[in-house]
Image (cartoon, rainbow, N blue to C red; front, top):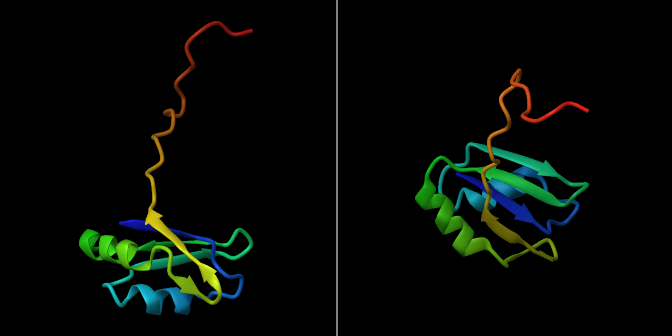
Length: 89
């Protein structure tokens, strides 16, 4: 399950997040965008991910209260090579 963390401090590292989330279970991957102050955590166990979300949402890390939530799935994109419906202008 993929988890999104918003409102991160600019100096949060991958190790900081991995250590924090591993308290709840295995962490497969950590991706951080420090410029936009958010990160993505991938946890293989859905139950561990839900526990992490419940346990860490609103918690303070390096002076910032994190917003922790399940990442929404992207809607499927339009298949490549198929024309759009309607007239061309």
